[in-house]
Length: 603
Image (cartoon, rainbow, N blue to C red):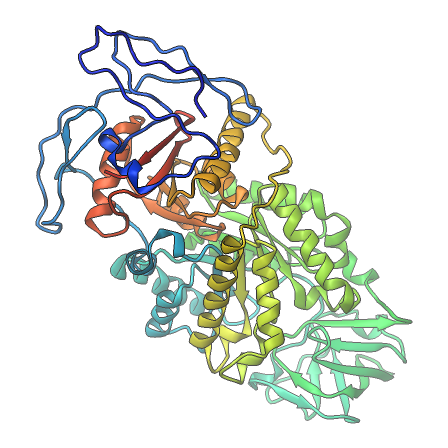
């Protein structure tokens, strides 16, 4: 907070007024009477006076307070779309209104409705990812998910052809353009791990106890012979041994190898279950997963490269890479994307779902733009009892390294068939929210489940309740975060964000505003997990969609300048006109262009 600050010399016609903020002080309703409601850490000063006071930010270098520039007088004119837009006084006593020629502000319409109905502090911070499949690929089904709070639509390239995926991407983009949503698109590669084929076009097959099934590397014409499964890995019959256990989809069904006949492997079902098309296969020997051959398979296959080219051409926002084994794969893919689409903002997400991923965990996360805890396949390669601690470790490491993290797989698995989840599933979702993961993901629940909308509602309602409980109990975490900045300038931004988060919690502000061109400062704020939501303003549509994956961020698209006074005046008028903020709300404003921080009440 400011120290040893003095008003400007008497020669100024109207001395600047300011309020000294103590970290222990709380903002009360009386503060609304502050002159022009703009008590700034950047104190307004006449142009003839050069302020020399400094502000110490949580151990950062002392930052010189910049003089506040007086905005130009703007002609008050209201468009017909917003007849109730009212001019309001700025800190220097001028009437300021949004000029008619200014670009509008864009926000996801579902988020806007939530802000209007519940206020900024009651918005959901945890983001929601939905896998799109046969149950949700239609325009009306996609819109229902968007209304329910879907932030990112995931396309699983294991299923469907590129023509089908292209139609889904077009539907999502049309939904954004015509209905005002801001849903991002994530493409998830198939990867090179061993998996079953398509079951001859059948949606599923049931394996009963004691049945003898044939797992074969031979190609079959549909329909498949009875009790037969195609395996994509040509060396499968050579690698397995009689007595090995074969797990389907992480243990949803289990078989014992009883005989090998050339390209065919005969297996007895020991744990009955449902076999789904292209389900992952792992085989265990003497209590350990057999992974020697898996480790030799390429992370990105020839099909994956064709899918990646497709994703680049379609302009997806995220590409999730399956079964990542090393940082080298991530770096290679990022270089390829940069070469194929110059200026692209496609983010690369590393899926942590194998022992190799865990062995090189930190280097993989450092190289990537985010991570996904794919617990289904991961649980097939490590003992089940280790999955919770591994999840917590990955979530914590991602936050330390300022990378968004998604908790995925089997969150609400029972809702594929039933309209309500088990209480254990609710507890699982609650734990992921409690760990402060950036996002939660639905897989089969939204792709092929009978109740995708209800599953999304469960994720949203549980997230809201746990987040509110966290704030009510004042669980302010000690901000012992690892330094992630490499340059001095980035270090200043990092310290500003840490200080802003602490101030937001102590002053109980309604929102933090951050003006960011590339999204970096918004990401640093998200990492600090303040109690209030973060309004992230960017002039880039792709950056806006990419910020959809990060905790607590409400991304807006807004054309802005380097003049913070002008930006704030325009933002206040636009948000107030649409009912997303109100006079008296307390906000903190940051900018990565000027590396500034301000505290004010909305006029």
